[in-house]
Image (cartoon, rainbow, N blue to C red):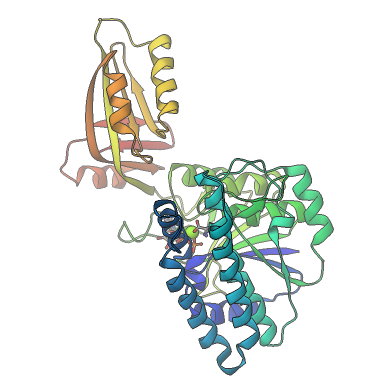
Length: 416
Ligand code: ADP
Ligand code: ASP
Ligand code: MG
């Protein structure tokens, strides 16, 4: 069996859905499991709806009407006069969301978040399943919540691998075309959970692992994995082949084209991952597999913007060693501050963090009771794999001071 994954960008409108059909027609859809994300920016829209619900619980969040219109418009474009049945289903799904809000008693944000945000994938896969059927191709809609079993850690649930594999093996019919959701699963009480934003790539890998799939293909709006995000860097080049290890490193440092959790399950069973363009499905794209580390062997650029650099030195002239470092890290953990880069010397400690949960001020206040703290906001962290002369030229072309620099044999990082 092979596994395909189509992300939000590929199914952002009716044309996208028609293109999905054309892609699977071109490359073949026998014995294929297709994992699909929510359409376009639906997940963001649902996040806003959830926030509004928490602000004013007895009012139906406005965004729901807009989101319903967005999906109904796609249906009108896809099915024209034959949309009655699917339209009815979409109305039912939106009624379920409204009923959930009306009857919910849980004050727990992340629980409510998962129950609601998961409807993005339910909507997209329902529409796509019906459309493929409407165009004459038999296919099955699989509820991935009956397969993907997780713990109760809402918004970033951890997989129960054993149970999930068992469910997938039992429920996925071979020799057929299956449409299922990325991103979502359920816990032991059958409440919906999610695997973290952008988690659909990971879902595809989970299905592939359980099914011993021959390959996974993720269909993107780019020709494959490039040596930099084309929205940020100019003259990017396609990487034809990279090893699992290289892909893990790139994803870990922030190349958002592949979700970092996707690769290890695939590596374990040596299932090749192809990253291809949904606009040019017959082009080869990038193969992530066993073999050459990287071809062509060129530097790869990743940037994380708007990070914060903290420079700490001790107030009492003590050295910054194990005890201090462990205290600093416990605070970074407590204040949910993802650490991107660290560097220490005898009397100073620098750390580049991502102020994702906006808790920087609180953290700095506590740190200042023990250390001198210098806070530099709005810094950019550049990571360059396979650093060479050209990469060096690139970094120095900014004409901005390099605040921190760190190099290993394969990776160079700069805070600018
Ligand atoms: P999906 O629709 O599957 O969610 P994403 O938008 O998450 O797709 O991922 C595709 C985007 O990833 C591209 O449009 C591109 O801007 C970005 N990207 C970041 N780094 C890279 C890279 N190294 N190579 C290709 N694309 C990249
Ligand atoms: N729809 C989810 C998100 O936007 C999952 C995904 O697209 O991978 O984060
Ligand atoms: Mg995405």
